Image (cartoon, rainbow, N blue to C red; front, side, top):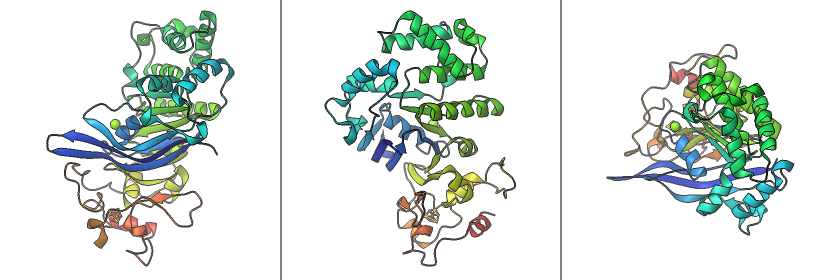
Length: 369
Ligand code: SF4
Ligand code: MG
């Protein structure tokens, strides 16, 4: 499958009075076209910071100190958008060949504007309040089209707005409704319609549904995943709720204290978690999929990033910590002989430190009890 994004060793610091705090620590991962990647972890683990770094949305005191975010746009695109896409892409590319990837971190402000909306849409955490209360839903959609596809006629824009509402399951006569006339779930759907308006290749969503009740959240997530599959759009979905991701995402990256500690497919993570922290996260909620042993959750709290523990940052909380854990920083490495490319950062999987091989699931579970 085609590559859309390749993040290479990205680092983000927060400048503080008594030195820099490493919020994102040397993270690398790839995203394929049409892939839904879930970024999970407790609050403060750096998942939003990572996503905002990729989108170049960080503001001081947060700063990207090094790394690359290579973007590989598809050559062909939908007909109605061909003109606007061509002009935005040529601005973004600025002479670069698509095959080499375009480093988002090196785009000029003008190139970045072209890149956002046309190639990338972002739905923020406070999405529920993202709609303008004094404009109708229809106007808010057609305004986006007007700004970015000026050659489109007003009739075509209205028609397109109706289609977008239909796509997200809102009756087209709601075009004239104002945000306060819609339920929370409908407002969320309208926001998704706006995010899709220009058919971006990549959408980033940061906890977009947390304000909604669980049933509505599931409906919205179902809708998002269907639309991404239909348009072959890639999605990075950020949440602290791993149970949501298991149903929605193709792949999941779990973050802890600024690092990705496990990255694999949803099904592999559910059936065969590897990192002790992943076990803890997976089992600290009641599952919908049949009987699983419920653990009491992960003891302790995430570390203070101003003075992180030495070695593995999870070691003070890890029920399986052993000798090397305080001395050596584990790297995210592919597990040998795993077809799906499961990666884990834990010394238990390192034969140099544990010649007998990793513990079984039952052994890990037993340590958590
Ligand atoms: Fe636990 Fe050590 Fe693995 Fe870290 S490296 S998760 S402390 S066993
Ligand atoms: Mg956040």
